[in-house]
Image (cartoon, rainbow, N blue to C red; front, side, top):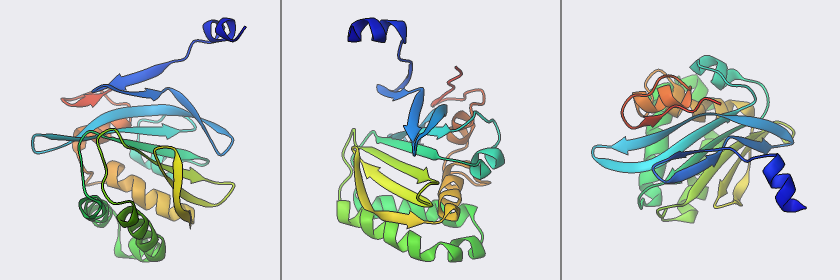
Length: 194
């Protein structure tokens, strides 16, 4: 019977660099769609595959950042990285794409997130890092390989600050931003349109 149900409702997924992401997920009781998927590189190294999930597809950064409801960003590590490298990268992306006032408003949550990442330690190849915005709880939850890590980080503004790392005016990588927004791909990016 289960097999018949699976055949009647085929599962769809997107794949990039050997990483598969579902085309739809449930976050906080809301169905989200895979908006885009991309490869983050640094010099010649493949760092992670990223996926952005939103309630409705959008091609603009502002619409994605300010969309109402649940949201998810998935990072699947393509190489080893120590916690301090990861924290410094997040903090640099936040500084490059947010005002001092925006950063000040989420200082406590940022410090808590950095402490949680440092406590996790080494990120290994294949590790799945998920940041969910959960509106019913009013905050952001970090998951590593399916397990909640750290406490819920309150406020929606933190999630906007984090999304700007990848979708802001000075994103971590231009073609990554384009692909996460479902725009035509450049090298190293994947456009998923379903």
